[in-house]
Every structure is written in structure tokens, then in C-alpha cells.
Amino acid sequence: MCPEADFDREKRLSIPLENVRMDLRTRLESDQQMSTAWIIVPLLPIIGVVLLAVGFAIALFSAISNLSSPTPTPASLSGFLAALFLFYLLAYILIPVIVAIYAIMFHKFIRRRNLHFNRQIILNEDIMALVKQLAGKRNLDVSIPINYLERSLRDARFEDSEKNAALYAILSASTPLVGFYAYYFLMKDFFKHERREDMFFAGIASLLATLGVPINLPHRTSPVPDRSFAVYFIASLFTVGIFTIYWIYALVSDPNAHFRYQSIIEDTIIAQVSAALA
Image (cartoon, rainbow, N blue to C red; front, top):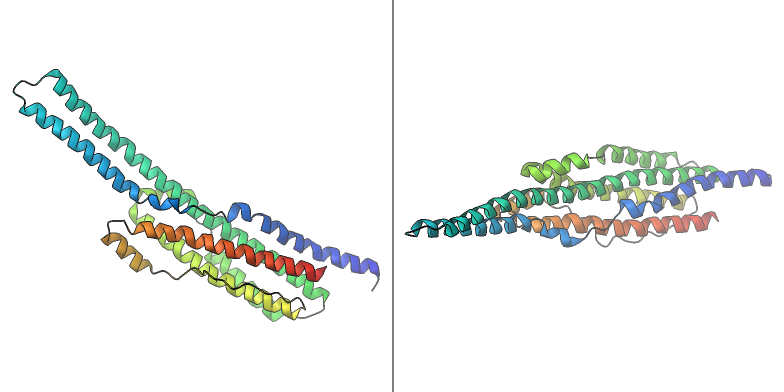
């Protein structure tokens, strides 16, 4: 084969390889590590109730003192009105603030889910394109494993479909049942996503080995567990929402661990495939 043809084939092969590299660079936006400080959010309603109770107690005490006084004075009446105003001020400020913080938290969770799942589909498509071109270069028929991986991608497009982050954030923050549903799919979607992802990368590793590009994928040390929604839901009800502190911790830490391993896997694949192609 002439040198020009070899150069043209290598150039075509470099296009999907560069696309994969570009996909890896988008990790900075899609795979953000969230702080576990979000676990304080379920405590905010408790803090709000305590503050409202204190404000109500102050207003009630002022009212009782004013009524029990033989000669109520304008000063005592103004004190009662000030305490009552404080109670209503706390009620009208705390409730919207707590709802807004919940909405921000849900929006961050769901947006992070959407960004990662979308990026993963694009990355897997580009990896498939790279493998196909590599198979064509080496004149090997890998249609059967390719068909299996393409089916996995179709399943991912259907099951990892995007959720409306803004809509779910508003409804979840204002409606407890919608909030529990958001907890449910955020927990279950990452578990199912990770299982499909592991099978996809295992298939890619096997396929690359067939093409003469063996790669050694690191073992996943902290897989996303299959957490029981029923257990978490009942525990949250029986503890008057306190258990959701741990639930939110899981929704933060599980994707964080998933993203860390994901970055190692992707860097391993791109480094070893690039070295083999070079």
C-alpha cells in the first residue's frame, strides 16, 4: 500500500480519537464533585420549626403578660405587637428560604445526572466509532460484539433520558411526594447506569484485545450499591425526615465515587489506545 493511503487512513482514525479526547475534557463540567455539606438541608425545616416556636412563645408570653397586667401600658402592647410581628416575619421568610434551598439542591442533583448521562452516551458513541475504524484498519470482522455494544447504547439512550431539572426542582421542593420520587430516580438511575457502563467498558476491553490493543482496566473499588427505596422511604417517615440526612449523603457520595472511577477508566482507555495506535 502506498504511503499516501497509509497516511490518509491514519488521519481518518485520528478523528474519532480526537473526539474521544474532547469528550474527556467535558468532565470538568459534567462530573462535578459535590460537597457533603448538603446533608444540612434536611435540618433546615427542624431549625425553622424551632425558630418559629421560639417566636410564637415570645409572642404568647408577651400577650399573657399584657393581659394579666392590671393596667396594660402602651409599652407592653407595643412589645406584644413586636413579638407577633417577629413571629410572622420568621414564618414568611424562613419557609420560602427553605423551599428555595431545597429547590437549588434538587436542581444541582438532577442537572449533574443529566450532564453526566448525556456525556457518557456521546463518549461511548465516539469510542465505538474509534473501535470500528480500528477494526477496519486491521481488516477484522467484529460485527457481533459491535452489535452487542450498540444495543447497550440504545438501552442507555432510553433509560438515561434527560429529566427536566428546573421542573423537578420546583415540584420536589414544594411537594414532598415528588421530592421522594426525585430521591428514588436519582438513587436508582445511577445504580443502573453504572451496571450498564461496567458491561460496556468490559465489552470494549474485550473487543480491543481482539484487535490487538489490550488494555488493563482498574477494578471498581466503590460501586454504587443497590439501595432499597422502600427501606429509605419508611425510615424517613419514622424519623420525621431525619433519615433523609443520610439519604442525601448517599446521593452526593455515590455519584462522586462513580465519577472518580469513571475518570480513571477513561484516562486508562485513551492512554493505552493512543499508545497502541502511535
